[in-house]
Length: 126
Image 1 (tube, rainbow, N blue to C red):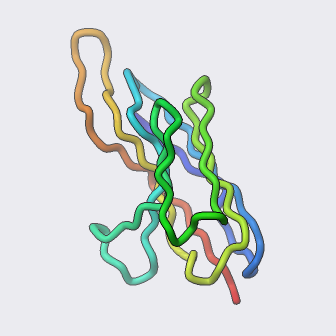
Image 2 (image 1 turned 135 degrees about the vertical axis):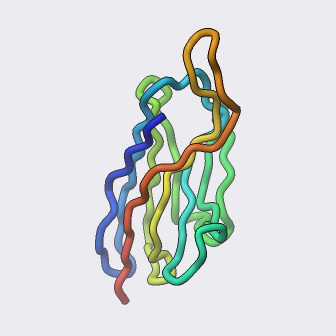
């Protein structure tokens, strides 16, 4: 399973960015897909949930970004989007695409388990 993120960059406070993550490979099923972030200086195991969306469309959004960030998905394209508005300097982080699901081909499946993208940098200047 490959998760390819795009859309990160440098933006001024109050600005907007849209992240995309395309999932490909031997994906059998997706339970949830979304985004975590790792702020500068934080350890990898302290990645913070940003937002996820389940196969049924239920969303789980961190309180710190509610009302500013919106998660959506295109099931046909196995793609998830994160629209980030009214960005703040504290949103600066590496944003990682996350997928929880089952991978493999007929007769040989693994999971459900977590899959991670390589990350995309989002920097918000004050």
